[in-house]
Image 1 (cartoon, rainbow, N blue to C red):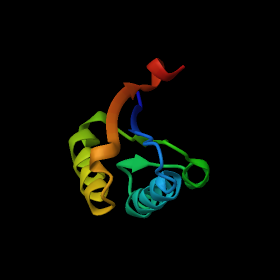
Image 2: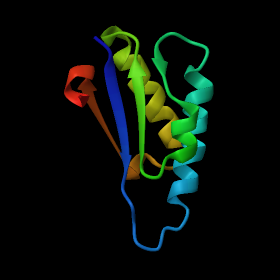
Image 3: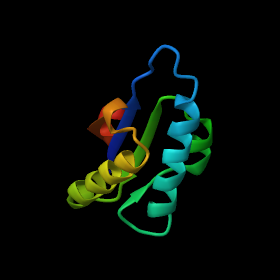
Image 4: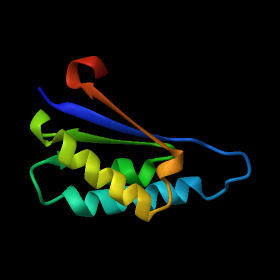
Length: 94
């Protein structure tokens, strides 16, 4: 059963750049995962994102590695303090 990782970003009053920053972050995630088999992120969803991104894990055993990569890229984009990572099984999203 696929697992979903959700990354929600806190909106702060006066921060007009959050959508742009989230999309740039999402594009880096897509570049990291689009050719692999650990996780998938939809580039169209990244382009439409505002304050949430979702990745689908191919298998639960990839969870820790994928979350480490997400955390590293969050740090690179100076978004770690605005992000909340949560997880769901595919059945919880329906």
